[in-house]
Image (cartoon, rainbow over the protein chains, first blue to last red):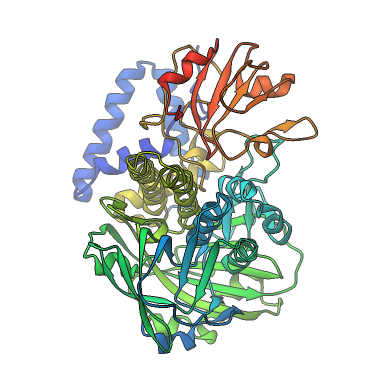
Length: 70
Length: 514
C-alpha cells in the first residue's frame, strides 16, 4: 500500500501558494471555509485512496503541529 | 529635495564639489545619479572606452541604512568589472539562512544559498551600500574618460533636445547628451519632470531598521523570525562589516513613525533580539514603508531608466540594488554596441529584458510580502498552517517564505535568445547566465573577454570570435558539452544559443552581430 508523500513535490510552491490565497480573495470567513472544503473534496477524489487521505487527516489533526494555533 | 536640506543626511565620505561646467556642452552619455546602478553603468561604459559624465546631486557618499545584501550575480558582474575582490574582502560572506518562530530557540527551517559550489564568487555578501559605492568610485577614478561631477543636481529636462539643466551650489548650466541614463532612484526627478507613470501596489506596513554596533560572536547567517517574542509580526537579523548588524522589525500600519525611531522605543526591540546583556550603539535608525511598482517602459527615446527610478520592490529578497545592477549590466554592452555603430533598436531589447527582470522581482517580493503579512483571516490561517507543519514535515518547508533571495533572471523568450535546436538534459539553457567553474588554474568567467565569446568542447578553426575551450571533465559536465558542442555567450555573460554539433554557419541564426 502506498503511503502519503511527505517530501517536497512541487516545482513552484510559491505560485501554488499564491493560487490558494487567491481562491479566497474577497470572501467572508464562512465562504472561505466552504471553498476550502470543496478544494479538499476535489483533491481527495482525485487521490482516490482512503489510506492516504487518513494519513493526511492525521497530520492535519496532530496536536503537535497545531499547538501554536492562536 | 532642496540642496540646503542635504545637511541632515549622514555622510560616509566627502568629495570636493565640482564647479559648474560651461553652458551647453554636448556629451555622449550623461548618467544622472551616483548610486550603485549609475556607478556600475559608468564603470562598464568607461571600461568599454566611452566618454561618460556622472551627475551626483551630493558631494559625498551618504551613509545610513540602504542596501546591504549583494548576490552572486551582482558579484559576477562586479568581478567582470574588476571590483568584486574588494567587495568580497570587506564584506561578510554568508550562505545559510534560518527561520525561527515565536520564542522557540531552534529554527523551523534553514536554507543554503550557494547551490553550485566551485565558483569564484560566494552566494551572498553583506556590505553597506556606501562601501560598494566607494569601491566603484575608486575604480571609476582610474578612468580618464569618466567624469564624476559632485554636487550637480538636475532641475529640468528638455527631451526634444535631450538637454538637462543642472544646478550646483553656486551656478546653473545646461548640457546635452546623445543618451541620458536616469539612475536617480525611487523618487526620480527625471521621471517626475517627464510626467511618466509609475504603477503598482503600496503595502500598508511599517518596518523599523536599526543598524546597531555590538561586539559578539554570532554565526554569520541570515536569521528571520515569524511572530518574534519581543513583539511585531516579523523580524530579520543580518551581519554587516565592522561589527554592525542590521535589525529589521515589522511594526504594523497604525504607528507613530517619529516615536518609533526614538532610542527608548527602539531599545526594547534590539534587546529582545540580541539579549539584555549585550551593550550596543546606534548607527542609524529609520522607519520605512515599501511599494512594488514599475514604469510601463524603461526606454523613452534617448532617456533610459535603470534601477529604482524604473522599478521598486519590497526589501525582502535583496532585489532592489541587485535588480538595479542587473539593469546596468544589461544595458552597458548594448549601448556600447550602438555607440560603435549598431542599430539603435538593440536598446529596445534592454526595455524587453529589463521589464522581464523587474516583473520577476516584483512577483517574488510580492509573494514574500503576502506570506509574511497575511491580509485576511484565511491567509493568516494558511500561513500559520505552513509554519505549524514545517517543523515536522519536509513537504511544507518549501512554502515557508521569509524572502526569496535575489537570483539572476533568465530571458528564454528574449529576442536575443535562440531556442534550442537539440534536446538537452543538462547544461545551461539559452537566456540564462553562464555559471562559473574552475578552469586551467583560474575561472571560466574570468576567461570571458567582455565581448561575444564561444564556449566549445574543442578548438574551432577560423572562428570569427574568441573561443574558450572547456577541456576538463567537470567543465564539460556542468555545461553538458560533448566534443562538437558549443555555447554562444553574450558580452554580459548570458547564454544566447547552444548546439550539440556546432558549425560556424549556426551563428547566422543568432543575435551575434556578424
